[in-house]
Image (cartoon, rainbow, N blue to C red; front, side):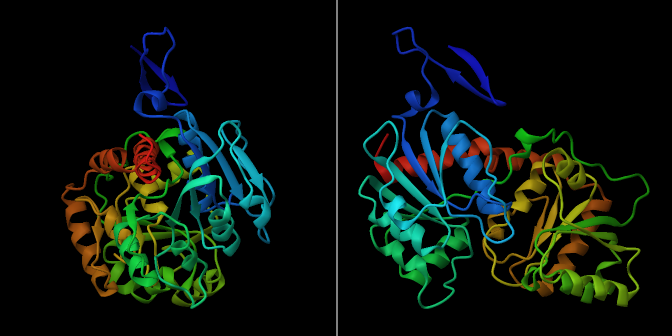
Length: 386
């Protein structure tokens, strides 16, 4: 046996006696043909998940085909440059219903991430797909009476939610009583795209936290709530840096100016990726995420953990699945948030928060390799391929 490394991923390569080395898929089961349907343009959770999931599957020896809708307004037609998987751009209902793999007669599994009618119906109608999985990347709540996700009951074989509460919510909202599983979406694997290094240490003599918010500036994300409660928070927080864009950006900026708090609460707009993103995350003591509305399982919390950055979050949606001893998550009641921040601050001052333990928790449960392995297990369960 020998240890091989491919794109920073290590695995043991064995021989079957024929002199040819076996890929991980050969050792652990038959290679699969997988179709992933998800939006790939611009930047965001589904885009990151689809690309890195396809990458992980392909590196493990599986045939992967991705189908993406046309770019939405404001997004370019650019897609990740890779030879690991093929892409069907701007699919139609007809093309999706007739898509087939290159080396096999059927896809073992198709996984739809999103809520489009075309995606759901096209996969349902494609007779070259053996098993169909719908991946719930939202909160699980039903948005309207005529919701495309009702098609999950038509020829889909499994529902996978990105967090336990999300899975349960979907089953309730859509009366699903079939096979279910819970597997998180893949974030940008910072352990692969950058050097995450060691976590930040508390500076000697520092008594208040350098805090950050990363995410969309929408009403339900709770950024304005933090401004309203700033007098309660600032006894623990020396500064709050807000990274992100969205419809509430101008309103939040105006409110900060009206408060006269521009020196301690700063807005920075869109944030970077890769090493620049890692360096930015590691410059803070804590991430704050006070979401007060519908939420799935924010990938930004996984990216924070990859860097050893602790977080305090309102436990709505699937956030509770990210709970660990070095972070704080409320029961979903935003009135608990300031108290959680106070308790965290006391532990932080006593140097009881371990960034290293946060990183270990991430690598054990949410790294690119760990999540790809969980997804492969889920696909094999659904497809009956071992």
